[in-house]
Amino acid sequence: MAGYKPKVISLTKRPGHSFGFYLRVEHAVEGHLIRCLEMGGPAELSGMKDGDRVLQVNGTPVDELTHSEVVDMIRNSGASVTFHTLDEASYMEAKAAGVNLSDRRSTPVANGSAKQPLKPKLCYLVKSSSGYGFSIRSAKNEDGLFMTEVIPGGVADRAGVRANDRLLEINGENVEGSTHDQVVAKMKLAGSSIMLLLADEETHRHYKNRQEKIAAWFATAQHLPHKPRIIEMTRGSDGYGFLLEQEKNRKGKATRHFMKDIERGSPADRAGLQEMDRLVAVDGEEVQSCSHEQVVDKMRQRGNACRLLVVDKVTDQMYKLGGVSPMVFLGEMKDSNPPPSYIEALNLPSPAQQATPEQSRQEELKPKLCKMEKDSSGYGFHLNSLQGVFGHYIKEVVKGGAADTAGLQDNDIVVEVDGVNVEERSHEEAVAIIRGSGSSLEMLVADKSVYDHFKAKGVTITRLLLGQTSYAQVHTADTHEEHGEREEARPQTPTEPARERTTSTSSEDSSDERL
Image (cartoon, rainbow, N blue to C red):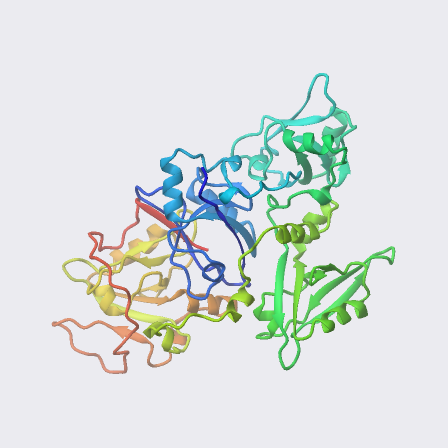
C-alpha cells in the first residue's frame, strides 16, 4: 500500500524508570495503542504520538499477537527496545485496504524510495521446556540445511526464524558444509541458548549471484532481543562522572573497557550509563584494540560532548556467543534516519507555548493520601491492573465524583488501601479490600514520576513520606473538617465525559500496561 511509512523508534530507559507510555488495547478498537505519553519521557521525545499503533517490537510483527505477549516482548527487551509504529489514520486506512500488517513483506516504502538492502539475520534463541520450536531439513539436489516446522509463537518464531530460512552459522561457526547429524550434535552441545545466522531464499540468491560469501558482519541485528545502547553526554564542570576501567583478555591482546563508579546525578548517570557497561565505540570508532590511554584521548578530543556505544553484561554475552561485534547494530543505525536521541531532544529549541499549571508548578516529590466518602454513584474511579502482573493504577476518574474531589487522578499508582500495602496483591485482593471499606476509603497513591523516583532510589513508599501537608481530604455535607492542614488546591485534570463505570471493578473491555 503506497503512501504510508512506519516509523522506526528506538527507546532507552534509565534503571528504575519506564519508557514513558502505556501500551493499551481497547474494546472495539484494532491494534496495540500508544496512550498516556509521559511529558518529557523517552517515548514522547522520540516522536511517539497518542493513538499510534505498534506494528513490530524488535523486528517481530505484533499486530496479531495478544496484549500480554507484546508486553512480555517489551519487558524482555531490557533497557532498550525498537518499535515500528504507524499513526492512527494510516493504520485504519491500511486495515480498510486489507493490508496484513503482521507480514514484514507488507511494510512498504513511501514515495518510491529504494527497498531496504537484503541482509542475512542473526537470531538468538533461549531454549524453553519444550525446546526451540523448529526442525532442520535437507533438500534433495540442493546443498545446505533449512529451517522447518517453525512453531507459531514458539521460541524460534519469536526470535525471527522463518520456515525455509537457510542455516549458515551456529554460535559463530559456519555449518554450510556440515551434515544434518553434525548440525544437530552442535546444537545439543550448545546448551540452553544459541545464536543462528540465517538467510531467506531471496537473500541467499542475491549474495550467490554477486559471488559474495554471507558473513555475520552483513547481518541485521533487528531480531536480537538485547540491544546495545547509544549514550550521549555533555561534560559537566566535574567531567562526565564515571571511571573507565580496562581489562585485557588472557592472551593479552584485545582490551575491554568497562564503566565504573558512576556518580549519581552526573552527566553519565543522567544519560543512562550503568555500572559495568562495556564500552564498544566512541563516536562510531570501535575501541577494543585501543589502550586505556587511547580511549581517554579519543573522548578528550571530542571536546565537551561525546557519543558512546555500550553493552550491558547480558547483551555482551549474547553478541559474544554469535562471534560478532555489537558494531553491527551501529551500522544499521547509520543506515536509517533515527529520531533525535533523548539528549538531542532536550537540547532542541522548544516551541513557545503557554505553561500549564502542571508544568509551571515545582511540586516536592511526595505521594498523596486521598480520603473519600462513597456517594450514590460509588467512589467514582476504576481500578486497573494487568492480568497476571502485580500493580494497580487509577483510571476513569469521574469528574466531580468522590475520587476526583479527593485528589485521585488517572494513572495514579495505588500503594495502600486503608493502610494495607497492595503493590504485590492480586487485583481481586485489592478490589476486595476496597469493597470491604464500607462507606469511606483511604488510599495512598503516587503519580508515575513520583513512584518511579522513589523506586529507582530503592525507597519504600509509606505515609512517612507525606510530611504534614501532603494529603487531600474530601468533605461532604454530613462531615466536619478535621483538625490539621490539608491541600486546598491540586492540579487540574483534563475534563472527561462522565462514564457509567464508577465503582472499582476489573475491566473486560480494555487492558493497558505502563512501559
